Structure formats: C-alpha cells, structure tokens
Length: 218
Image 1 (cartoon, rainbow, N blue to C red):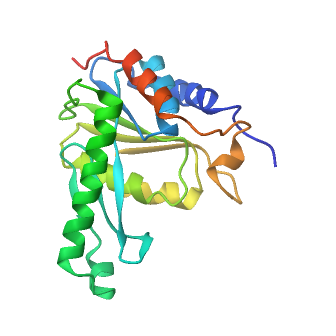
Image 2 (tube, rainbow, N blue to C red):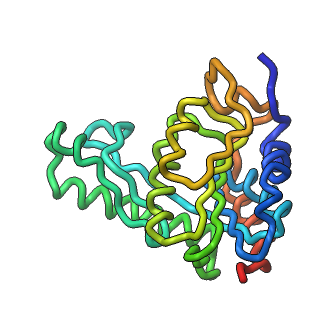
C-alpha cells in the first residue's frame, strides 16, 4: 500500500485543481478543523475564495461519550438529535440539555480562538465548499452539512481528498455535489493514504485563516 498524497498541502492542491470550475466571487470554502483547514486553505487559494471554518461537535451518550446521540453545529446550524438512539437508550432530556450546552461552549471557544473578532461569513445564496482531509465514518461532517443546508446556500459541495466509496456515496443525499478524489479499497484509515499525516496545531489553523481573511465573498 502506497501513500496517495505527500501531505495535506499536496492533497489540497489536487482538490483545488479538481474544483477550478467554482472559482469566482460567490464561492466560500469552509474547512473542518484542524487538519481539514490545511487542505481547505489550498482549495481557497486555487479558487481565489475566502476561507473560514465549520465546526460540528458530537453529543455523546451517558457513560459512552464515543456513542453519538446528536451533534451541535457552528453558525446557525443548531442542534441535531438522533431521536432513535435517544429513545433506545432512554436518555433523559436534562442530560441532553447539559451535553448540548457543554458542546456549544466548546464551539464558541474554538471559534473565538480560530476567528478572533472577524465576523462569521454569510453562506446564504453562496456556493459553499466544505473541505476535510478525508472521510472515515463522516458523522460530524454529516451534521455540519445538515446545519449548513439550513442556512440556505445556493449550492453545497463536499470535497475531500480520500474516503471509502460507500461513505462518500451516502453524502450525496446531503450535498449538491460530493467530490471524493480517491476511494481506495480496502480503505483502512484516512491517515494511511498520506505520507505525512502529522497533527495540525491550533496555531497553524489560526495562521491560515488570518492569511485568507482579506478575501470576502461579494
């Protein structure tokens, strides 16, 4: 098994080339922190588009924080609940309220860290390209797309360098276009297809967002 991409920058450059038809004043690129922002920055540069972030935080079940019972999405996306899981596990409303408040606070903290005092972009009527460094299960990305759809973009596009074919296909009900550049089988994991998949630090996300902050959607 050989790596497909040298690193996230290389992956973003490949994505940018594949998305060049979206270059223009009404396109907005949103990266999924942290690694997805590195990929998204290259896409934004290629398209001459502004760069920002979209954050979705999983709501974990009591005593099983890895089990998702919903998600909270940044911006106007709101709260998405898995009612089936909530009924099955008989999760109290008070727990959901506390968990939602905790994750909303974390989103506010991350947004303040990454964006500073810059206002959130308006996605209404725009072509919005949501970029991550890959798809594995895709739960939080799915929540982010549902939340963004509520904000009425003209076109919603998912773009990732690599992901399992079956999962990529599942996103076609949530986005107007899904671009998974490579869909290797067996998939194994996102990091398996990068020669360098080192952790992206908050400082790098902040730098990339600041460097693109002079661009604005018309």
